[in-house]
Length: 78
Image 1 (cartoon, helix red, strand yellow):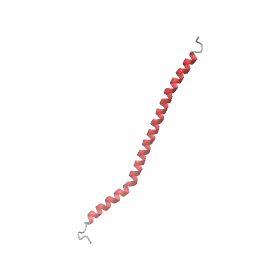
Image 2 (cartoon, rainbow, N blue to C red):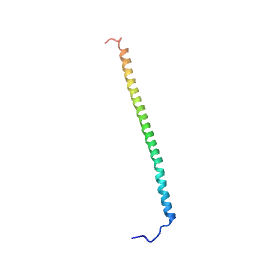
Image 3 (tube, helix red, strand yellow):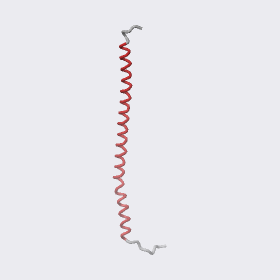
Image 4 (cartoon, rainbow, N blue to C red):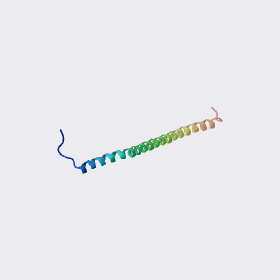
């Protein structure tokens, strides 16, 4: 059954242009999303590295304190 109401050509042009715009912008949005996700993961990796370094510095301070205490205790009488 054929539709007897013709569609205005301006409407079909508007719909077509909107569809073309969406299809044309998709690659740019995908790349932008990729850049955002990769920069976020790089930031998290750097934060993890800083946290690990700080934790190792705390452990190092404790080890050095204990080593100095042991060295200082060498000459003491039991």
